[in-house]
Structures are given as C-alpha cells and as structure tokens.
Length: 263
Ligand code: GH3
Ligand code: MG
Ligand code: MG
Image: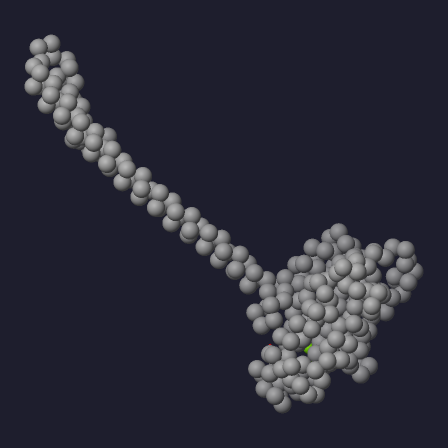
C-alpha cells in the first residue's frame, strides 16, 4: 500500500493547499478553504495518532505480560524436567548431569541408599502409603544433610546424595548420620514398624566416569543388603586407594553446611 492510498484525504488537502500557494492571484476565500481543509485533516491525524499510540502501548503491555508468563512456564518446565514429581528431588537424568558436571573439576563422594523391604510396605499398607514413606524419607534426608550435598531419586526407592569435594571417610559418616535419622525415628505417615535403608558409599577422583562412580557405590550398597541391611558400606577399592594418599583428600564441608563434628 502506498502513502497516497494510506493518506488519501490528507494528500488531497495538501495538494489543494500547494495549488493555492502556487497561484499568484488566489483569493482570501481560496486560502481560507485550503487552510480549513488542512486544519481538519491535521486534527484527524492527531486523533488517529493518539489512538494508535494508546493501542500500541496496550499491545506492548500485553506482550510484556505474555513474555513474563512464557519465561515462568519455561523455567517451570525446566524444573519439572529435572525433578522427581513425587518427592521433588533431582531425577535420575539430572543426578547424572550434575555428577558428570562436578567430576569434570572436582572429586566426588557418592551415597546410594535403598529402602529396605519396601515392597512389603506397599504390599501390606498400599501404594499410597508407600508413596508417603518415600516423601517423608526425603524430608528426613534433607534435614539430616542440613543443606549439604544434592539429593536425587535414581530408582523406585533408591536415592543418591552427591557430595563434591567430600572425602570418603566423611561421606561414610554422613551416610551413617542419615541412616540413624531414618531408622531412629518413626515415620508419621507410617508409625510401625520402623523404616530402614541400606547405604553404599564411593569416592571418585576428578575426571572419573560417573557410571564407574555409581557402579562402585552400588556394589557397596549390594554388600550392605547382603550383610543384613540397615547399614553403611563403603567401596573397598576406594578405601584402599584413598588410604594411600590421604593428603590428597579434599576438605570436608564447613560446619555451616553440615555439623560433621557432631557426627
Ligand atoms: P530390598 O531390601 O532388597 O531393597 O527389598 P525391596 O522390597 O525394598 O526391593 P524390591 O526391589 O523387591 O521392591 C521395590 C519396590 O518398590 C517394588 C516397587 O513396586 C516399589 N516401588 C517402586 N517405585 C515406587 C513408587 O514410586 N511408589 C511406591 N509406592 N512404590 C514403588
Ligand atoms: Mg529396597
Ligand atoms: Mg531398589
């Protein structure tokens, strides 16, 4: 669409005014008519422009609101893609991503824990009670850790705690602290019998493959199950390896993040 089509009336008024100006002998009436015509069109243009500005302001506001909602939805989706919807902790994919990220530049201790005889809880009390136990266990896990480490759910009733820059010895103490927090207290959703879990702990140096780190902790967990459950076992190969070079152990977490001294 050309300017002439868009501003047909205004262009006609302008051309008429130029015609009058270019005439040497134009009368006062001709000037008045041309000016009146120009003024009306000018006034109409101002009115339309105001209306357009107000409408574009409204559209800008709507766009900003939509953009804000889009950003909120994107971050909600991102959160949901990385978290377990039953317990709210990291899901399996996110645990692997975070662990691989840590291992690129830090050593990592890994705790794997699995609820003991969980199938019985489901069988005897029903699946919803089983779900409530999983949620309450995660709460107890969070309280016991006091902000240290990152909790993830890697399977049905199997959880991990990622502890970058924590020595195996300290990670084992942390696992024992969690074990006691779970076994030493009733679950409000499931008062009797007590819920217990078994623990496997591994330590892996920087650049170690997480599959390997996980395999070591899982083997230790298997041993904990085999040795009677409700106990903590550490990866023996790691114990031997780190015992040779304790000076290379990274610092434990500060007392602000976990009261290690109290363990
Ligand atoms: P163990 O001490 O050897 O670990 O025995 P277990 O009974 O805990 O282990 P098993 O692998 O035999 O059973 C795990 C059960 O966990 C079976 C499965 O139905 C249940 N489960 C897995 N995911 C969920 C879940 O999201 N909610 C509930 N309520 N149960 C689940
Ligand atoms: Mg189990
Ligand atoms: Mg299991």
